[in-house]
Image (cartoon, rainbow, N blue to C red):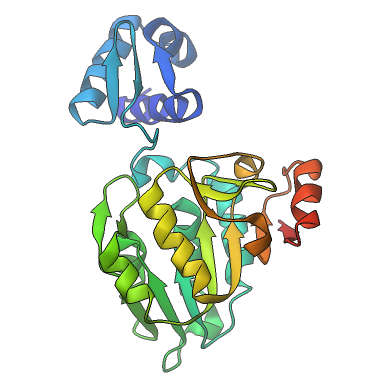
Amino acid sequence: MSRDARWKALLELLVDRGRLEVEEAAAELGVSAATIRRDFDGLAEQQMLVRTRGGAVVHGVSYELPLRYKTARRATEKQRVARAVAALVAPGEAVGLTGGTTTTEVARALAVRADLASGTPALTVVTNALNIANELAVRPQFKIVLTGGVARPQSYELVGPLADGVLGQVTLDVAVLGVVGLDAAHGAAAHDEAEAAVNRLLCERAERVVVAADSTKLGRRAFARICPAGAVDTLVTDTAADPEEIRRLEETGVRVVTV
């Protein structure tokens, strides 16, 4: 296994568990403890994790990793979800996209839709995600509106009062949310309160709200609430979703689409 592959695997394990011991990681990856120690030291130098006595924990109180290291997790499910979400958007609409791996896939799915290949504009996309704006800016038929704000390196999202100022001046047909968790009782949530605040404003400015989330996000809670479950019009998730979680969300008025 190459170093890059090991680093990716270690970061994915840390996302799932929050903490890893050297011996535990060595057994998982089938390499020596000395190799894992060197890997942990290298990742710590890049501020991707924090070394502890005998192991490592994820860097940062939010237990997040930069977007590029999360993209490959459940990639197939996210792409299926993204295509289904993109199909809910009509030509000419104004679409709000939050940051995140699944919403990035939504942006890519919109970019390759044949019926959005032309128009003046074919679509208006409002986003606070730098990576999404960067990918879509090369599509001349799309009107791209990027909010202001302060960039968060974990998610490439712009947050703060500068973002609020732009969003307060626009009206959206649909807001597409990426979430850390969606729970019938506690609603849609993010790790970071500043991200949640921008996402909440996107919801308030939209005629309808769509959550794009793979099944691992359902029934989960996170620190910062974006909106109650009842404020979500449609959830698009994958077929591995727990039927009981789906039932509870449907009882709040959410339309659930599984793909």
